[in-house]
Amino acid sequence: MAAAILADARAILLKQYKLCKRCFERHAGGRARQDGQCYICRGLMGNLDSTADKIIDAVRGYEFETFLIGATLPTQIYEREDTMRARLKIRGRESVKSQLTRELGTRLARLARKKVEYTKPDITVSLAIDKENNVDVAVRSRPLALFGRYVKKSRGVPQKQDRCPSCEGRGCDSCNYSGLSGYGSVEGVVAKGLVEMTGGQVPKFSWIGSEDQSSLVLGRGRPFYARVFNPRKRKLKKSRISGNGVTATLSVIEDEPDLQPRFKVKTKIHAKCERALAREDMKKLNSLAGAEVRFENRNKTASKKIHSARARRLHGIQFALTMVADGGLMIKQFVGGEEYMKPNVSEILGSKCECVMFDILGVELQ
Ligand SMILES: [Zn+2]
Ligand SMILES: [Zn+2]
Image (cartoon, rainbow, N blue to C red; front, side, top):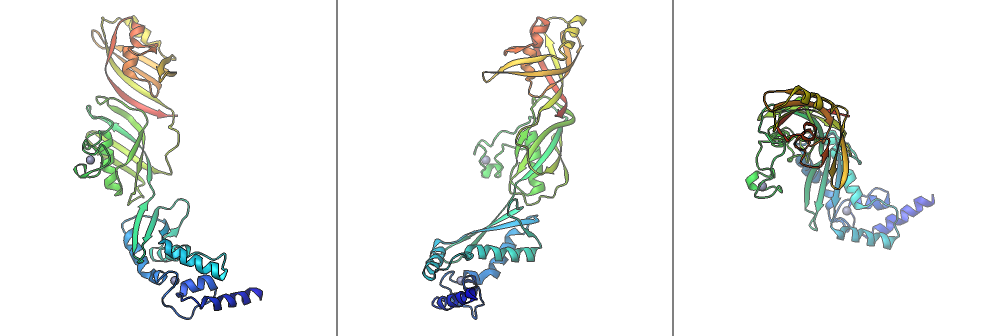
């Protein structure tokens, strides 16, 4: 009863202000008889239908199930609402902004048959409203995280793409806003494919290990993560991208892990030695199985385990060494022994060796 009387009193007081239907109802809790000029929103709340139409236009082309609408309103609207509330001692009422975004959310949900979601919406609609109540609508979709593996069957394809020389990766006219110098590398091939498939921006990659430009990557391929910003499409299930001797298969994942997983790599090293090799030398190399290779890395001692090793003489001074080792072992240094790395191939054979080429036969995540 007391509350009803209070509400009536408030309604009477509110009549001192010219308010639109929504702004009146928001503060009085009752029904307003008429719509009209509004002291608080100056007609903004009366334009919800046309604003909703603008939003529908802006989200067209985005694949989404969930969304969130945010807005920035001119400070004058809040100031007027606050002033009126202070004078009439109105507390605990919904703000003009939250009513606006809530009502637009209801409309978008109904018109597009989608759901409002606060924590991880597929798209975020941002409204910027100026003093004249002009509404600018911007849409941004949640980045799409993918896990993939690539196989590289032709030599001479680098893993990473150089940045565009004109803009150093920021994106410019000459690189078509990709930030890349081209699309010849593994990164370039996959980036181009993902942009075409998702309609998003050029992705960011996290590679699980790396190889040489001249290396092949075989077996199930090298794993990697990719993150596509502002994708239009996000239902990709399982996708395949190929070009330049590279084939990548990718699937959408919930999110990229914070820590890169540990991994083991099976590598086939093709090397040569300064002297002719005997069968004994191959036995020495086979004994690398189980060894811990220690080396200095940024003033810290790191170690990588060799899980298996199998050496084979090729002809003359050349040999092949196939081994499974912890990911991140630097193959050329391990063969050459230039860097502080112990044990290393040159040391074991007592003669200077050099890595001619190496191929990745498989990468296993742990
Ligand atoms: Zn109003
Ligand atoms: Zn550029």
